[in-house]
Image (cartoon, rainbow, N blue to C red; front, side, top):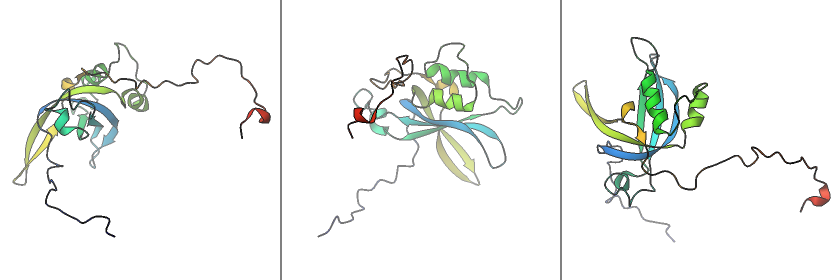
Length: 176
């Protein structure tokens, strides 16, 4: 008995092609500081195009759902620091109020991973050694709050704020 027979006629080779330009609803999947091999520091972000909005956004999310858009936030050459407005556009889009403190990059990640945002994706063309390459570009000032808040995904710590008495359980109280 054969499990399956290969058939390569319907394979698409465009999975690595740039995502068409447009506005997309995404989830921040990962964000962390990184550096190029030459030591230039940047913040690396992965945004996954939401797959729950196929019907609401058939021409954008519906056609590109589950793909990842890579965003790099670079330190400024003149100052050697991140532009505060770049970081603030992202935090505001993720729904954080004015004056929200961010302690460190771990705190930044905890605050942003899993948050929905809307971004404008463009296509950037660059030439290197005579070859033109297209890639997606998302600028920080294109981050906006989502038009489609997540439903039923608020995850709270069930033990936080539990001020009840600490009870000792006896072995006879356990079902096993």
